[in-house]
Length: 330
Image (cartoon, rainbow, N blue to C red):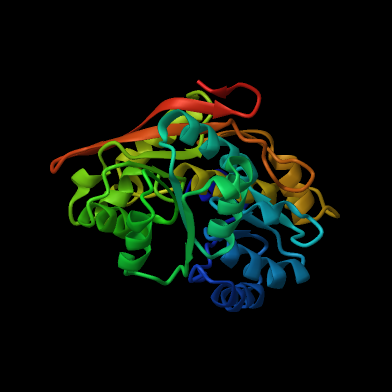
């Protein structure tokens, strides 16, 4: 709506063509082909890193660029393997370092690593274990991203006597893991990553009070700006947005794509990827200032280290610490 309002006087109108990524490389590749057939100029998404890789293989062959709002796998930094790819969130190579610092500050001495076996989960788990030391872990357990029953995984954590659980999950499986840990009497510290770092995870839980005291990391937004405050206000007016995840990042990916399309039309001869790179140079976004590096990555603004406060009636997630590569945890 915003882009079409601005574009109205130029006689340009945008259309959003939707395709389901299914959080799967194969499903996303099929969906991407429907977008190629529909003649799209650019694609916003996918969310899951594996889906993004599957879609990018199809889209890049057709010269169609992507801007992901949530895909953080370190593998996506390889611009030769994943051309025409941009993202407004930083690589998890850094988030692994941030989680390691959080474990040092808030964890115990017996750390379990429980993670999805997909591009996001394995990439971030490898980044964390590389920092923490795989040999220092109490146990490391991977699981398929379709799993819904975590009783055996949690039993293994309990049997090993772990006092801290680092979990790399999305919201629905993360909620199930948290509830299973509680059901089996785990009383140590749970530390999650950006897949659960929003109050929206409460919607997947039978007892949201179990979130109380859980710590989770996510890419930090830069300081408040006119754009971020305006977006937060608009988002709060929509229940779907207010309860969503990666909403500011999604807004930024869509608006950069729209303005890049303007740029391409106004400058015959340049590619859409060149237009995106030019648009995303000091872009003032809802999630912070965005400048794409040569490989389509962003350096980010460090990581929010947030704590959940929850009871039966309310839940909040508050960024009470910050981690940056140059200054550590503060």
